[in-house]
Length: 458
Image (cartoon, rainbow, N blue to C red; front, side, top):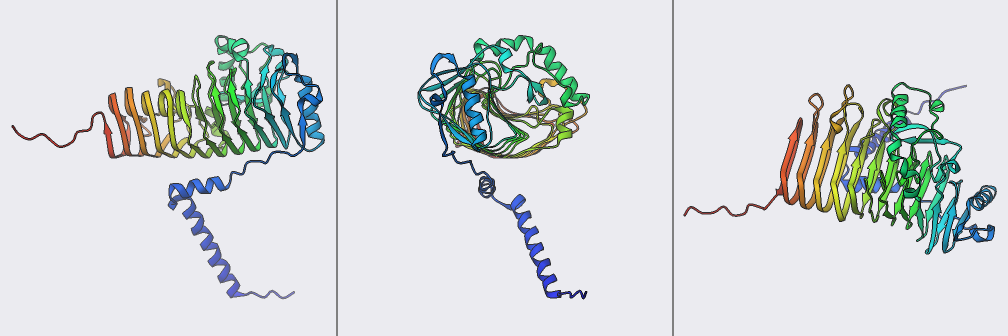
């Protein structure tokens, strides 16, 4: 066999390779913010609604607030699995469900206007335990109320309401969770196999209302989410996620809105938040397990939202695998937020927070407008977080009762390369508090009443 070498083809191949590498380099470092956002959005394609329409009432469902629709949902989801998907239509009514809904591939849950799903409060109905996570540690626990595990092409839509009934149920466990919470962290730190991290009966870790775990192609839109037992919507180790036009009225303990964790390619837009906790909290695992997993949360776009609750956008504190490429733009506050933008970690976490862009975000009354800390809760040692390349352009706030801009680095790992431009905070107690920082740039920043033309000598 004769081997013929075409030198021209080799040269052409090398040229194409160099061009590709140059293009890739351009895509990561030299693109504008709009170009980078555009590149992320090209990778996010929401799944389409199934044309196989299945009416819940045709399977025996009753929206009288008394009848247990759990067996009906099990039956209709079994039909979806057999038929390779389906659009489950929930007509107006109040549907009691004594147990979790476990979604399957290619399924749309269409909760129509006037329809409400209300979950039962007997904890035993949410057993057996399932693979899940709790505050950044993987384990087995009570099933989330709506749960999707290792599925693709899943939609939750409609103008109806999902009521977790947490106030009357799991939320009462808040004061009893500490021993199991500490045990989960100990198992994390000592690398106990996940299959041996069995919680559930005898433990008091509240389940999430909605969780997508190791899923692809997710859309959640229009629904109203209320009365969650714990976090409202948890995206875990999932990708290609769209959340839009969702409304939150969630006031129980730890009622975060969206918690993307170990996730990539996420679009959160046009959301009406009203949460007792974080509106959006971006996470990436806790401590030892997060560092070992090394699956960063990345390519997350949050835009055109209305914030209200504890904090607007948070990164951390469980973020040990790292968070990068986060864009927050064109958002406002519809009410009070304790903190507007909050990046938090401590020296137990490790990991990094980098390439965060905040553009054209307006808050009203807050405690702190922007707060970055490497020493959350004043605890931890040995694994400092690297926080750098944070860009804020167009942040406004009416009143900050505590501070305008706060950055707290760590003595051995300073927060660096933070750029503030076009920032205006009308009134606050402390304008700026920066410690253990490096290369902090301020341009066109006014905190307090603007000083204008200097007075003349009299």
